[in-house]
Length: 403
Image (cartoon, rainbow, N blue to C red; front, top):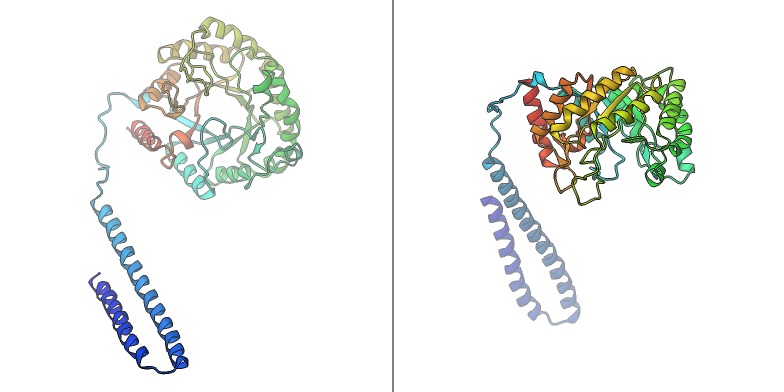
């Protein structure tokens, strides 16, 4: 640092000395021609020296800045990894999360704009946590796509910059995970309330995806029927039955699943200011609705993962018990979709408090659920999430289940 300052001082001194000598020399020249020539030389030399001075000054500022960064790094306190929480609860009472949705086509949470390097790291974090299954939440939403579908592009959808579907399948193979493909969502269901309207597009999408990707990758393990319902929605039974049949017929019987929500007190639109509603479904009505739905889709839908965030924590056991009873009656595997974002906060949506997640996983274990998936790891649990709280949730989860 001292050497750099000395160099800058000498440069400045030589520049000043030259200016004085140059002025004296210029006043002794008699002819305009010689004066002109000397002025040009002086200008070039001064410019060069000024540039050197500016560059040296820039180096000085950079060195100071680097020194400050180094000092900050040296002075920054780090977490003592040897310190562990004194837990009052046993992880054996909770069902661990072993699957996650991949939500790259979202409409109510922000994109993180990751490339393949960031996704690769996220898959490594998932694997470390015990996740063995990833589910593409949807192949596309309205005009945005995860892969360059010739059919959907011909319908006016936007060209994606990269083939996310191919990338996810490759990463799933790389890290020994199973991949479930989520069907295309045109948005027509959300606009009209008629789920059957989604069938027509997906007839072409299913064939296209299986031919291009399903036959190519061993990680392609099943299908997610992405239409979300809570009760006896118009066209839902027919749509689930037809789409489930199509998925199985083109893929030699690969498994299918759905992830509906429970129409509880927290089942409000993401755009709504309120956090709860008064016209929540009763346990009895929920059982009647889903008995009819399960009866209509048995044999073509293999698993159902109810979203767990729309009911209160003291209601978990009542609804979970009914879900498991109905699933067993109709030969459907009972999973849970353990939401890792908080529906109790006025800001929608932030990573959930660990104890809230733990309560839901414990209820799933008591009800003898078979698998826990989450919506979703990358935003709400990943150490590299845009939300700082997500990394802490990951740490609390790892510590809890490793204890």
